[in-house]
Length: 125
Image 1 (cartoon, rainbow, N blue to C red):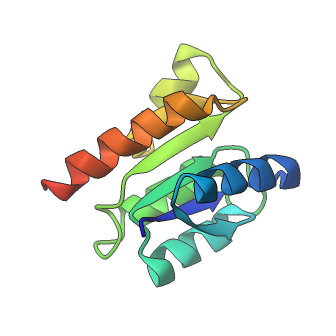
Image 2: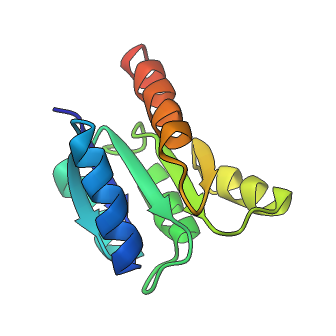
């Protein structure tokens, strides 16, 4: 079972998205802030990380930079999830080390496609 780390501070978003991912056959590990997200990335070694950008403690940009700076987890693809849909926000997320970017509210089919593409790409590297 493919493990996904969902880093999301909004309980409603977290519950809805994690339930939908579990129904699609993923194992979901949940972090509620950026610091916990970094810690769980290290301890759980997920196949992929869904990173909310607006987080308490450490925001998603900084959490992603910390993950991508650590050799043991820098290979894990990170998809930024954010309500900020401006082109500059996408650029900022990619600069922080995110491998892809998706807007909220999440459209599950589109997000699943991005997850599949990154998992496929990562399995060949």
